[in-house]
Image 1 (tube, rainbow, N blue to C red):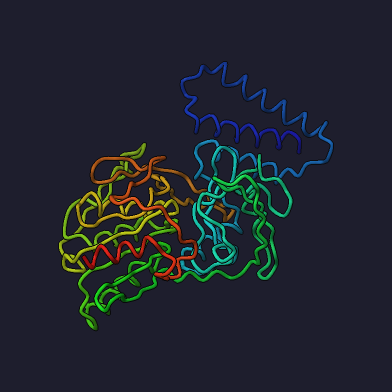
Image 2: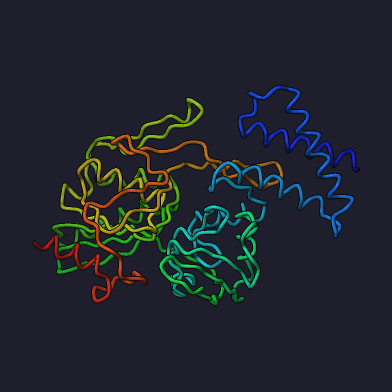
Length: 381
């Protein structure tokens, strides 16, 4: 058993070295490192204060390989992979937050509308330091996410550090079944169509199209507001469909990766779904990934005015690759670039009109939403 255990870890270590481009090392260096890794594992088996679970250790090793690549690559156990498939269909259990890693700390990319996290007051950019009193520092993203999972109806305590505040914040949140209503709409002043898109799941593009078609049929709409604030992204295909809906032609986004098959360009087909009517897109720091593709494409093609704050800056494409154990790996396979050729990674998309956000709940309330108010006044003028 011990021999088999060491062989497994040698394989894992070889994969680690491969992913980190160690092909330039000499064979002698390579095997010295493998022997060192095996020695460390043997010491852990013999000397660690508690008996280790070999299955968990192997999962942790795989997670470590992927986490060393970038903040978005990760191992998904069979349970997590199954839940992620439900999530893209628009319904899942949990708190309702999209998280990532930054310098070893779990960071909130965005809370999702009308979920326990958003209702409790969790904000994009918050750092989660403790989960139910347990320190998060040093854990993998997968381990932290597992700590946040639990039975629907149970309560979890998150300790948060927020930029601009000195004291830590503690939030007690009750887990719930999260049903994502990705598209909400409203008409302002009888002729301004407002569409809020809170995620990019499998139904987002069709829902948005139906809402706008209904607006166009039943009302005299003169202009539109597309609200992408606190939208953490989702499916690349949906970002392309939605960008295409508002564009008559031109490039939407390009992807560049290590392999030729990942180098692709996506273009809009003829036909603007709102017939060239004025369009304002609302963005903030919680707008990430697919949201940035849409906002950046519409800005670069001079199709919309972006209003709000700089976006998150997640400019990479992850592919979900199923594994034999019914789990999967989420692996960064390419980075995407706007029509201007700019990369979004670590930079984000800058608004044309920068307005600091003073609204927290995004309940389509013009009394508290200063950015929405500004957009409405701009369209009326």
